[in-house]
Length: 581
Image 1: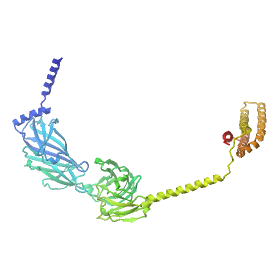
Image 2 (image 1 turned 90 degrees about the horizontal axis):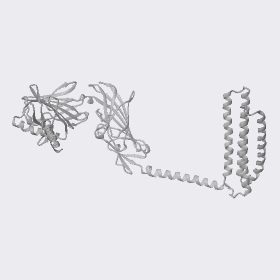
Image 3 (image 1 turned 135 degrees about the vertical axis):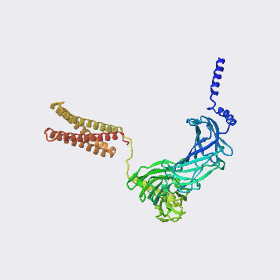
Image 4 (image 1 turned 30 degrees about the horizontal axis):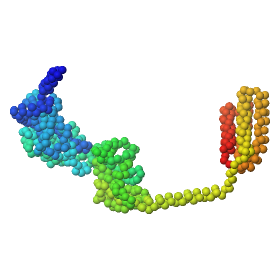
């Protein structure tokens, strides 16, 4: 078994050592071969840069190195300044066959990128393609201007006879000016570009150039008028309504623009003169802002005007700072976008929280309203801070309004409620109450007998009503109906005579019985009245003077009246049984 394992290990090592180019250790073994021969000479370098300053501040670099001689493999490196060491990523190298090559980075005086190349020969020429990206090399120097520092010529450790660089910008960006005189403007694939060529290139001069470019479309749109209304609600947040008037001053057409709102903004709605607009909402980098891209209803051209309304709700902490009992500071940020906003065209209306008063502001403004409904209407001039910086307003809370007045109101309500309670208690005490006493055996017997007789009477009345239905349904004969009704009526009369003898005795026990008797008599009269009306309706129906539908509706109504009266009698009897004397 041990011999088999050793043989398998030997075979595995043999297979691994047979591929020196694809392994990192084999690359190190391959370096002395290059050093013993000669350094690969690069006679030309073609570089292509794709610059996107509006979205990701990203520069994508694609460089192709052409060698003087036809070589198959080699190890070479190129360097860039150390300022880019934390901004470069995604380094990849490919040979003419499209195979990805191993890459290693080293730091000394420069940031060196070492590439272990193989299969470089393509016909009679040898070349190598390197791609990487630089992030955060674009700096914003104004609302429309951006400045980028680009290493246009990498510091190579080989002689370079020709260098050609093409810088392509995003579709909505073009070069405005440059301090590099060798550049010439052109267009590649519909994208603005700058070309730079040099026959004799000094690789050790660290050629890092500064280029300034601008977005032409943003400079051609101007917000001619803006009205912002800010309503501060301590419970739901800050409600903002931006009314924007845009005008196109020439150039290419514009179909959309992006507005940068405070982080955490919600309930975003966009309108124009023709109704609502569906906008695209995205979070900015590190959730620093809420970006709202608004598509215009039509392409704006030279001389076009557009009216836009944005409504949204932002968190309270975005606007209100330094809160204490007496004062707080309200900070209103400007509207950030890629459209120019002249400060003299801005009107700001601030609805302060209720029960507060205006204390101080870092700009001149006109104050209107009473302390309970405070508004600050500010008409800004060109020298004011807004809309390029935050507007700060100090608010002074009225301690009497916020603390004393609610407590005083609560105290008044408590006093009024207590007075009503005392008055009600006094009235209840003035009402004479009967003394509670224990019933004698004869009295208890009379109450029990009354309840039993009343329940029996109700059941007999229900029995009489059901007999009428059975007669008309021909379930019993007329003779049976008359005999049974005669017996039931006789028994009901006996019960009434017995109840009449018990009423004086029960009334002497408590005066409540008198009200009970009246309620029971009213319910019994309701039963007789509904039964008589039902009988008249049935007679009219039999004589074909009433339709079946009308009779059924009347029957349901009368049956409901009878059932309600029976429930009333049952509830009174139940109350008499369980009443406390």
